[in-house]
Amino acid sequence: MAISGISGGYSNWSPLGVISARPASTTALEAASDLDKVRDKGLVAFAKEAKKDAWEEKLKQWKAEAMKTMGLTEESLAAMTPDQRTAALQQVDEAVKARIKEAMDGAKAQAKNGLAVPNFVDLSV
Image 1 (cartoon, rainbow, N blue to C red):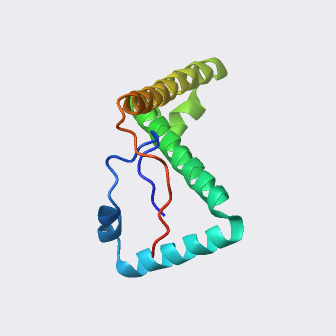
Image 2: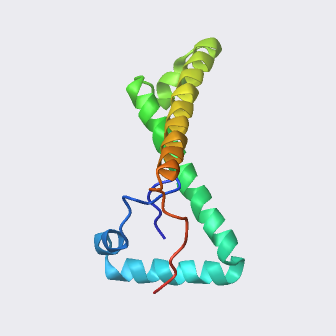
Image 3: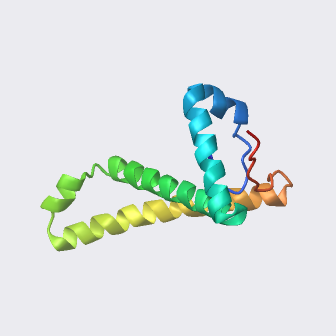
């Protein structure tokens, strides 16, 4: 199951776009495995895990973007002194925290303006 966006609303998300972007066999397999997960864990646990997975993926993406912007690679970090590495990683963390704050502020603004879409999981197959 694909969840695009973590800001609490899925205004840019389109179920047709997600389905049409993948081959039918992949979509059917994922839907079946998601349905099995729901049956195994329950709907609420499945939804929480899906949202957690979306956040983790977004955080990895933001970290990679911050490192790229700063010209850092895993190799360059390994070559740094401990103090330099700590300072560089703190800058990366600050950049990621700024992106998180930006996402949260955007979600709050959407909710305040009544634009936020309630979180739900559509299990229709």
